[in-house]
Image (tube, rainbow, N blue to C red):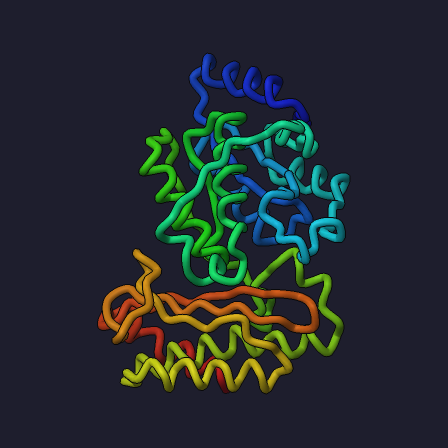
Length: 297
């Protein structure tokens, strides 16, 4: 496995793969890899002949009071995991390689990024779209694999790819969860034991909301109130609980078609996000009623 730290070297390597007729899949990460990331790497392998993992803690997507300096950077173990899961290369640049001192060009999506996390983190997605653009230009992929936990981010990147005509296919992988339901996140390591126990209320509340909707609950206010109550009962502080259309991320007046319930909440100082998608009226949702009822026993 190659470890590459310079953009030009990364581009040269990707061009060499293309000359050999090899397709490329990239998995963009900020490191501190967990089972969710590893599933993305495995998915990338199923789509392309060569897999490149990027590890870059992007300063441009952190707000002034967020955890950039404290964000975990276990590079040695990350490299080992990438090697174990068959990555062909890891692109791990330094900040000054990605953002020279006089950097002044940004990429910004203006519709899908205005709500949800974009409301409480106003500069976040401009940092995401800019760095992903740079990572695509460095790695030259045919495929890029992202997780559904960052649903809004994935939708924004998909829109950027469409609008700016990137020759990249976006592949989405399902959320990977702990046995008790908590979504895997690099930030979970910040949680105290009590916060960790309370954080289970996020996924539990989302499952309960989906079951209630499948059982006929149509009042958005009631669904939202129940989610807030359960998370606050677990010790969480709500950033947002939103029910939006899965395609446009706009708030809905009624639950129909593809609907997303998205949550961001704080446990202690740690901000966690999660979501669940509902396709109202489809058989796969009706059939999942028993699954969710059984999970509550």
